[in-house]
Length: 245
Image (tube, rainbow, N blue to C red):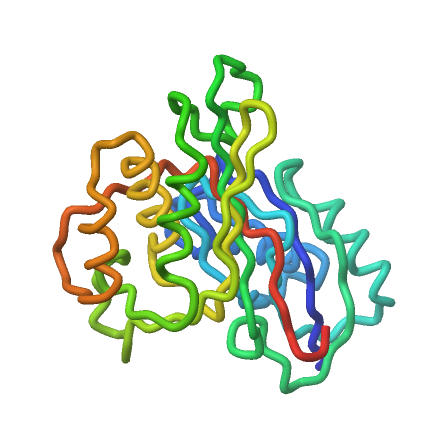
């Protein structure tokens, strides 16, 4: 039995997220179905680095699986892509050590959130369309949670988590023409965390949410607070870092 790491790109528009669900179309489900077809109908579990939500996209999602098959890595990659739908593609496939784990071996996750502030509609499945926003105010808010913080206020409650602390290494908004891109890198992300942060930062930039209230939720985290969740289509998982890639 050999372990393989894959880097996947997908358009999340038509999926109920990453995680396998009964009677729902998911990224994990499609990958496992493709592996099933190329491996004599043997069930193969795929483990992802992150569980992206319904409608969220990826250009650099990482995953791994164990399989016993007499094929070279490049042929496995080709066979997978030949059995996957057009909105998922395996970009890279490599054999890795049996101790590698796509989720638990990861050091950093990179996300981008994309906003458009004009009337262009052809990328509507990959951007959040808003009114014009104050870029300086967005970046003022984005800087407040650099470093290690408790993000209880900006995540969905989960009794199974030991803690809600994350280390944010990068948090910055960049603008070009009528497109704003938010870049955030952390050691881990909580459920809906990026979308809650983005949605609330946008409301600050619109003048509908007080910056001090936002800052206090970072300093003094608590559950069940008033924060705003951005829609899923602007969010993209772009890269996952490992000590040995």
